[in-house]
Each structure stands twice: as C-alpha cells, then as structure tokens.
Length: 319
Image (cartoon, rainbow, N blue to C red; front, side, top):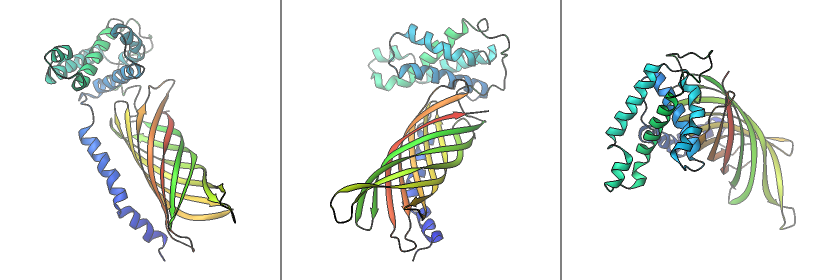
C-alpha cells in the first residue's frame, strides 16, 4: 500500500510537474517585453503600457481620444517621476522603435504585415502617451505629490508585500479505477505574497470551498450530485509581463465527504490571464486555469485522479 510520503514523492517526480515548470521557463525567457534598465523609468513605462492596454482591450478607435483617456491613468505615475527620468524614458522608446525597424506606418507601407508591427505600434503609442502627459505635468500634479527616484510604480506588485483574495471555479473530470465522473466546484482563496522583482511574484495561502460529483443513485441509473467540502494550502509563482500574468501552482488538498475526512492529496496547476489597473490600492485580475490533482490510494480507497478547467478572479492589495 502506498503511503503519503511515497505517493507525494512520486507526484513531485512525475512529468506532470516538469511540464508546467518547463512552460514557465519558456515564457520567462522568450515572451516578456523589453524593459528599461533604470528602475524608475521601468516603473513609469509599465504603468503607461498598462494604461494603454486597458483602452485597447475595449477597442482602439481614434488615437487622440484613446490617448486622452489613457493619460488620466498615466499622469499620477508621471507626477512621481522626475523630468530627467521622464525624458530618458522617451529617448529609450525612440531607440527601441529604431531598433525594431522604425515607425510602424513606414514599415507597413514598405510591405510588412500589420500583425508583425504590434510591438512597434505599442511603443509608438506609449511614447505619444508620455508626450501628451508631459504637456500637463507638473501643472496637473497635486501639490503634495513629489517626484522620487525610488518610485516603484502604481500598477504593479514589484518589491511590495501584497494580500490577494480570489474566487476559483472549475468543471472537473475524475478517474477512480475505471470509473469516470463529471463534476465541478469552487473555492475562496486568500494569499500573502511578495513581488520578488518586476517579473516574479511568490504567494502562499489557504483555500476552502466545495465540490459536487455526479453519481448514480443506488439501484437506479439516475445521476445525482454528491457534495464534498474541500480545503487546501496553495502556493504559486507568478510571471508578470506588463499586464499579462502566468502562474504555476502547487497545493496540498483534502476533502470532507459524508462527515469523513479523505486523505490528503496534491495539485499542480497552470493559469494565464490579465491584471488590470490599480485603483484605490486594489488591482483586479482574471485568469483561465487548468489543474491536475491526485489523491493516493490509502485506507482502502483507490487512487483518484482529477482534471480541472476553470477561471480565477482575484484582487490584490498592498498596504
């Protein structure tokens, strides 16, 4: 009979864990946008790009209108950065545009596909946004807000302690022996975390919720839901690329069903989505996630494998 330690060790060594780690490493090395090296310039750049992306997700129409609306979100960040750093960032954007082949319109007229110009267009819009903001800074800035070379950005978690609250829901397919069952459930989750750098964040916490699995009633072919309370101790490592977020998660999980405690199991999960702008200290996020759970054979119970697919809706706050 497989015990807790043996089962968990086998899970950790399985390809189920290696694959998500490999995917995160690929995303980290190949998918992230280039960023300014100077920390204050980098913070302002990320805030400006997030303000622009918030508008473009709703459908980009006329540059003048969209830039004016994004400026309302970018100005509070620009107010906290010195004029010299703001100019250095605009110069860096010009260098990046040149490095990628020059103005997007010029490249498009030369025959380059518009889909291949997305990064250049983003950079040009960011520079235009910062130039528009410069027309109103510092005159529009509150008198109590002062520029600082220690500005970390308003719309990120970099180098901060944060608290995260999430709701998580998913459909599920479970396999016990040769029996396959469909179901679903949800959980509330609370985390404490820290932004290790511009790109990386770690958090750990607690979750509690419920599951329902469709089972045949005794002596009948009728399917009826059978509920269970579940709880766990999850932790995740998050990769952030401007406003896109990718998580790899592990968790110890357990269930209470028919007033009986089911043995501990483990989960590995992958999630990807977007994070919004921070308002009043709170930053929302939305992700799709997929997870694999295993409950080892113990105490006369067969090994159970569970696949889950669903969404995570969260909000983080930094003190």
